[in-house]
Image 1 (tube, one colour):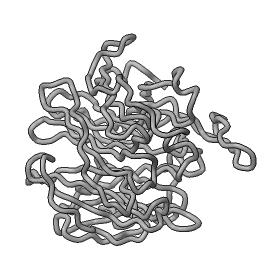
Image 2: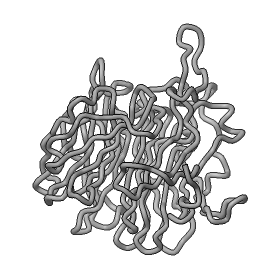
Image 3: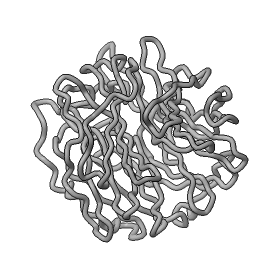
Image 4: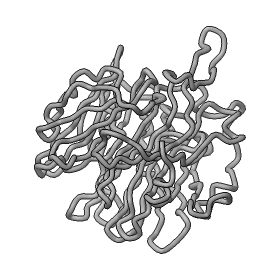
Length: 375
């Protein structure tokens, strides 16, 4: 969810023709062959956003996102593409949701220890996120076929962005947030019965701080990082009881541009964070809108990978994965809403993100590539 930004939907005069670059093929980057990248195919040329990556037990990589005329439109739905193990081309996306009366956004993929693949996504009345409910589907065959959708949480106004995980006590914790008039607010949904039911727990003091991403720390606590609607900095929270209560949010050293971030732990033990290294606080913005609606919007570039070797206390290793290019001059939409996972077989860091809202871009690098940069 982006707050329904002006210009985030269909182009004036109707949707453009499909871009031939969006063929799903992974290729070395021209100026840095250590980086491989692909622009995924799209079903609708209007709006592609909010990617979620999942590596399956068999090595296939799944990517889900929402695609349609524009964010909030009743014809905007969740789609799914696959990168089969041993190949270098993403498949054409297939629809995973199609409620004719609702907009379905922000998909989240996860796999349980028994192999079941889960999809979570909010579903709301067109252009009214306060009406959102949380929908889920499951797959027993690696995302090829799916159960009928069911409502996991009625909300109203419940949204998700980042994947669920075991917080250390065998339960399942799904970061969430409530969209309501006045101020969005972070919560977590916790299931103690393998996803059959969910109990909501408040993350105190998080008005205007949303889209929690969290990992267990070495000491057994949870570290959570949050997007700030003030476009100032990434904020952090800590839980010592497996996510049932959280500390008050405090700003970190990392800037935030009012866009999503995602955190994961690598096999080396380091934490990896993918985010936009820009903020209004640092004066990094462009003017958007017209007349009385003209405003400053924090840049959605560069897209940066950061590493921490001390469980998120400091982030000394940073390297830009995507910087502004000529295409970015024509739109404020930028390169944003990233997700990250590490391949279990090859150890590569897989990142997917919104590429100017035209498609989803998939990029692979190594941890060593990131460590060649320094803050």
